[in-house]
Length: 400
Image 1 (cartoon, rainbow, N blue to C red):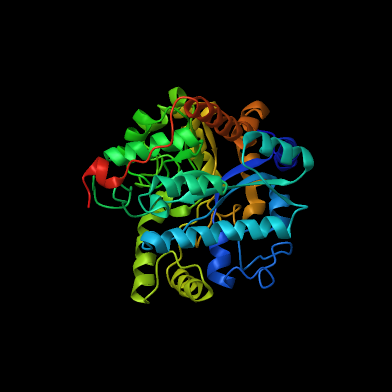
Image 2 (cartoon, rainbow, N blue to C red; image 1 turned 120 degrees about the vertical axis):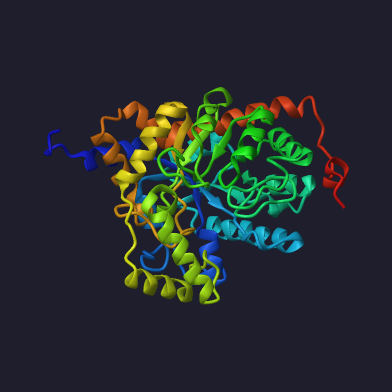
């Protein structure tokens, strides 16, 4: 191929018209961990390189037009503690919107996303990462939706009482009866069902139940990297009938086979130091950097991510893939995708591989917007025929 072709320039030009909808960014948790939400200490209107993966200047450089901000809380939080922490995360996004109105626009719908793009602002949506955030309560689920949450990941790294996680031992074998009811109620209110982090049994059960598009907000292809956080081909192949979107993640341990074992050892090192493996505070990163210096890690690249997207396109179809970087939710990132400024490098790599501008516009913007719009349409229909569910875990699963 002609090495004189300016693929990076073409990528930036494309993103100016069809910016990235990123499915998952953990900036709110980073702000909680590093500054307890003090936006004077971590002012994202200024470059925060070395402290965060995300700030407004780098979002602009990266061509991001819409961001699902994760209102994640760790899955070792439970009950009311998890609900309260989720509310604090939601409040953090509200503080960001109030502080940076020229750059960030609150978005609750596909129309809001398009409106923000027309205004040159970054559409800001929210996704709750883990069903523990609702404490087994459909009323709490509805309350999160009322506060602006537009997807919920059914589990995080640990099972919930009604759904199995990809990284825990099988519990209920996928979704329990109450888990199916959670999916139905999400469909009714218009909250996207996010299947990142869940076990393949849970993925299949959710697809059997959901009448609205599902998403994977930050997962890649299991056939390319055999990690339980990734999506098996049979599930990818079902997205066309469902209308869903699988959004490829950048986390090295999920996309580069050589990084899987290295990360497992690094996680054990963190635990040996009395730290949670997902700790990205200054103290946690100091331990991670020391381990990396003594044990050089396998490095993923934009090409690694492109390999996953090539496969996901083949398995799911061009209308059913997207991007979900997981920035500020991981200690390590690929070369060329170190932070939110890096998206043009990925798009340039896909252009180099022969992806068309039409296909790339679907990948970056159109597929995610369409999935949310379709979920809104399903919700409008269901709300006309079904009232809110008041089912409980005990009534459906027989739990105490």
